[in-house]
Length: 310
Image 1: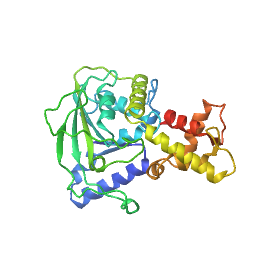
Image 2 (image 1 turned 90 degrees about the vertical axis):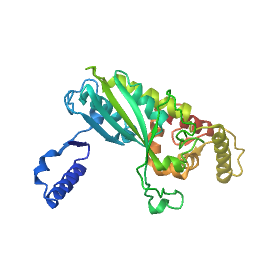
Image 3 (image 1 turned 135 degrees about the vertical axis):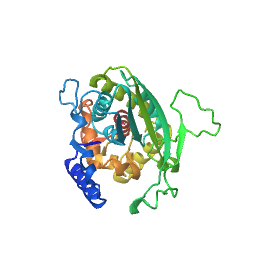
Image 4 (image 1 turned 60 degrees about the horizontal axis):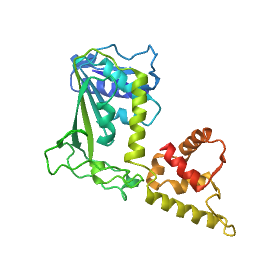
C-alpha cells in the first residue's frame, strides 16, 4: 500500500502512527507493507517527466476527497486524474473517488474524461457529521451511525426507483446554503478500466475539467440568480445611501472593495472565501478589465465579477 500526499509532515505523522500501532499490536511482520511517498499532483504537466508511478503499477487507487481539494487549486485535479488513470492496471484497475461534490458535477467529469476507457458507477454513502462548536447553531449534525450505502445511478442512466431522490445542490438559490441531505451523504465513484492499454494526457484532461467546471457552476448553479441580483442591487443602494447620504446615487456610483466584499458574499461564503482570496480573484479579473477602477466597484461591475469569477 502506497500513501501519497503533498504534505511531508502529514506523511511522517501517519507513518509514525502506523508503526506505533503495529508495535502495540505485535504486528511487526507488516511494518513494510505501507510505503509513504511525497508527490505534488499540481506539478504534473503535459511534458513533465516526473511521474509518480509507472503505468499499470496499481490494482486500486483510493481518493479520499483529494479530487475535491484539487478542484479548488490550479490544475492539480487534472494531474491527479492523469496519474491515477495511467498508474492503474489496464485490465480492471479501479479508481475509487470519494467526493462531497454533487453527482451532476463529478459524474460527467469522470465519465466523459477524454481518453479514459473505464466504466463509472456511483454509490451514495451516508455519513455522520461532526459539527465544529462555532457552527453548531447554524448547521444540524446527522445523528445516524454513518455507513448506510445506497445504490444510485449516474446522470444519463435510468433509475427504476420511484422514490429515488436526486442529490440536492448547495448553490440552488445562488448562495452557498447546503441542506441536511448535502451534509449527510457523500458520493463514491467506482471507475473500472476496461482493458485497453491507452493513456490519458494532461492538456486534454485539464481542458475537459475547465469545461465541466464552467458548465456546472455557471449553468446548473449560478451565483447570480435573478433573486440574488435584485437583493445585491438593493444592498448596494443601501450601503451607498449610508456612506454618501447627500449624493444622488445611481448604478455608476462606486463602493470600496471591502464594502463590496461584505455585500457580495454571505457569512457562510466568507468562511470559505477570505478577503485576501477575494482580492486575488479581483486582481485576476481586473487584468482583463483594466478600464475599470482598481480599488472600487459599481454594482454592474460587481455582478460581472461574480459571473466571470465563479
